[in-house]
Length: 116
Image 1 (cartoon, rainbow, N blue to C red):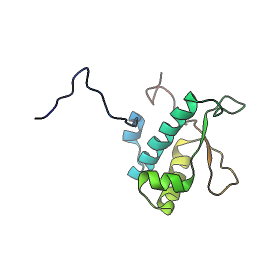
Image 2 (cartoon, one colour):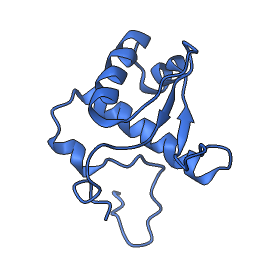
Image 3 (cartoon, rainbow, N blue to C red):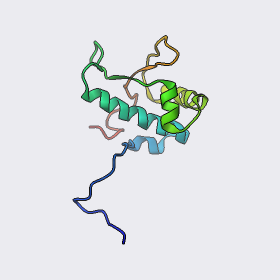
Image 4 (tube, rainbow, N blue to C red):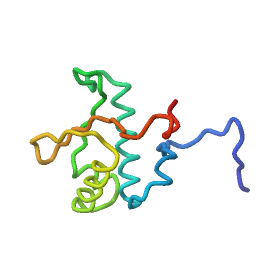
């Protein structure tokens, strides 16, 4: 018998999909990558030690872990990451080849992203 969604139905863990991504001409893998990074940034917001001296939330997510998380090759992740960084983030990359640092600063106005 099928169960229907009710007010009290417990939802499984999920990732947030920002509405502004629907209208962006980005490859789907890049959109999913952004969503995974945004989810990791939300965790950084909630935990101490993931805010820089300017008050910006940051995260570390090795390429190998991103590839494993998304079930993609490292090359695909690097290509998608370049697309995401150019289109969505103000960012800094560390010198470490495996470890990247992102300041999560979406370049789009908060109202356009539905965040006001």
